[in-house]
Length: 63
Length: 248
Image 1 (cartoon, chains in turn blue, green):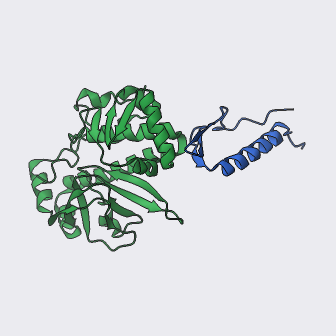
Image 2 (tube, chains in turn green, brown):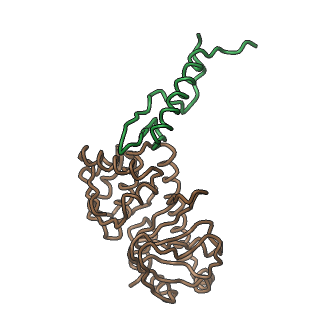
Image 3 (cartoon, each protein chain N blue to C red):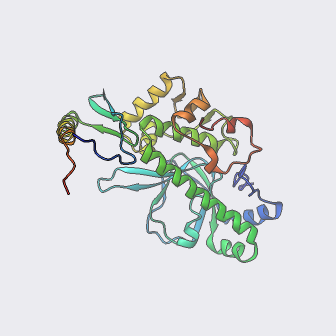
């Protein structure tokens, strides 16, 4: 599997999630600062994992 | 004098005695306004501009759900809506954050300055360009920084803005706004702001309590917020504590 071409601004460090007052806070990567309900965070997490799996299996289209 | 803080400590734009007298003479009225009062609504036709003498004001936009995003905070000495002079209406609302004292300057008086005093006109223009520079810094803050960085940047910036007008000793100042205001400035929720302020305190960078800000580590806070005060065009002759705000 080949890595995708580097794109400026792509984050290589993960954001950090924490729980506060019954909500989920997501800090980073840079530019990200979001508060979510537990449901929204859970569904976002699932979506992120699914997208990450698709990205990991990305292959460059043949020309 | 009502204009004492206008452009005070800014590079190359100190008002001369005649200029100050003319600007004082342009004031038609001085008003005190309660906290949390909207003084200009978007789209209102305007024939005056407002010089903030004392207190804190903001410019803001509401989203479709009524959630407020502060797009500027004005500190004493700021000409809050000088851009209304050429625009005649604003695209955002203007409100007080704290009780405030303002000087009203009719646009017809600004017409007179514009026609007869080009150097004072340049200095007025400078003040609107300073607003634009601050807007660019706010874009950077929201686009590139995490929650802790955004709050650190805002508090470092406010400290640097209040120092020239004598309202910060270089690390401590009364801000007069709430944690929720900080959230609306930094594009985060109140819960997030609460956690960030606690984190800044635990890291020994800054304490925000009862609307009083005590920056424990000026350089450290600036570094955390990637804050560099160059965009504020502060005179190099200001006290050293202002220069300590530079990120390294």
